[in-house]
Image (cartoon, rainbow, N blue to C red; front, side, top):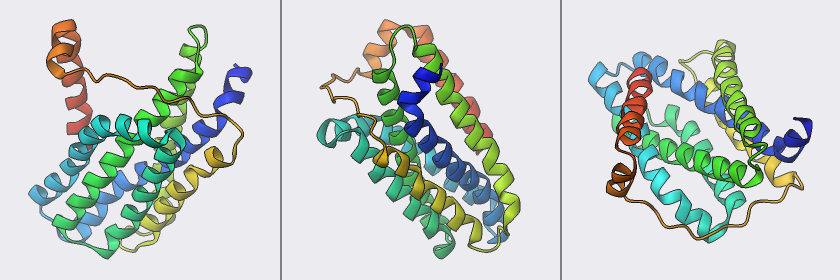
Length: 219
C-alpha cells in the first residue's frame, strides 16, 4: 500500500485541500445566503447552478486535457475556483452567485475528471482498488475537515470564503512541485447518452437516480 501511495501522494494531498475548500463553500452558501436575505427559491436556483456547471465540465474537460495535459488543466481549474470563492462576498446577489456556482461546478467536475483519469492511468489491475480507496478517503477527509474549519470564522464576514480560496489555491502546489510524472494524454471517442443507455439500460438509469439523491440533499 505504501508503494502505491508513494506514486500518488501529491495528487491525493491536492484533493484533500481542494475538498476542504469546496466543502466549506457548500455549507457557506446556505449560511451566508440566509444572512444576505436570499429567499428559499433564490437559494435553490443558486445551489442548482453548481450541478449545471458540473454536467458541462464532465463533457468539456477531456477535450481540455487532450490539448494541454492533466497538470495544466488541474492548475487552471483550481485557479478559477479559487477566484470564484473570493468573489462570493464581493457580489452578494443571487444572479451573481448563480454564475459563480456554475463556474465552481464546472471546475470541480473538471478536477474530478482530471484526478480520476490520472489515478486510473497510474493504477494497475492489481492496485486499482487500493488507489481508488485512497482517493475516496482523501475526498471524505476533506469534506469532514471542512465542517470543522467553519467554526474558525464568522459566516457574515469574508474570512471563511478567503480561507476556502486559500486552500484551493495551494491544492495544486504539491502536484506542480512533485516529480511524479503525469499520464500521457490519449485521444478518446466520447460515448453518446443513447449508446450508453443501449449498452447498459439499468446502469444508466441507476446512475441517474443515484446522482439525483445527493444533488437534492446538497440543495
